[in-house]
Each structure stands twice: as structure tokens, then as C-alpha cells.
Amino acid sequence: MGSYSPNPYRADAKASDSIDRKREQERRYMLQAAFKNSEELATRLVQRLLDKHIIETTSVDAIREALSKQLKKLSEMEEHDINFKIAPIRQLVPNANFVSLYMTQYIIEDLIDPRDIEDIFGEEGDIYLVIDSILGSLRSGE
Image (tube, rainbow, N blue to C red; front, side, top):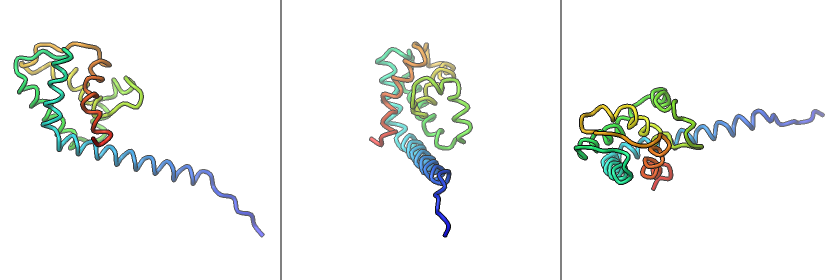
């Protein structure tokens, strides 16, 4: 009579696969929500960035359009391209929201170029927290 010994590696693999599936599901949900709600999120983002004195602009509408366009564009991007963009600040905060990280990098690196932005103020961490105060709702599905 043989003895049965469960394979602990198989159980670990199943648990890991389940976590990966859940993470991918959350990621897809967040990207869809960012796309679907891009106009409202961009409006709220611009207002918060102005209120917290992160950006100075000559055209709120131009910045809102740029942020909305970027939120929509995220849903079409490859995971590799998103990860490449956020790599420099990935460790900024524990358990970071990848959409908030992406938009932080976008504001720091790319938004400074349009002629409607006069200046961007604050450290990466401060900018992330302001952005995540709006985009954090994507994570919980609010």
C-alpha cells in the first residue's frame, strides 16, 4: 500500500496562478475604468493639481484634454510600455497604483512640454499622492 503525499509545489503554483489572475483582472478593470471615465477623471485631476499648486497653466482646458487623452491611451498600451514608463518611480510608495504612477511620470516628463503649462512644482512623491487622491478610486471600483 503506497502512501499519498501531496505536492506542496502544486498548491503553491495554484495559489500563485490565482493571485496572478486576480491581479490581471484588477489591472484590466482599472484600465477600462480610466478609459470610460477619462473626461471626469481628467477634470478632477486638473482641479486637484491646481488646488495643490502642482501645476500652473494658461489653459485649464488644454491640460484637461491632455490628461483625458492620456487616460484613454493607457487602455491601448502594452503592459511592457506602461512598466517602462513607471520604472523610475516604481518604488515611490508601497503597493502603488500603476495608473497613478503612470500619470505621475506623464506629468513630470511629458506634460511640461505643452505651451499651456507654465510650471510644475513638487517632488515625485507629492505629485503621486495628489494624483492618487483622484485615481485611487479606480482601484476600489468607486
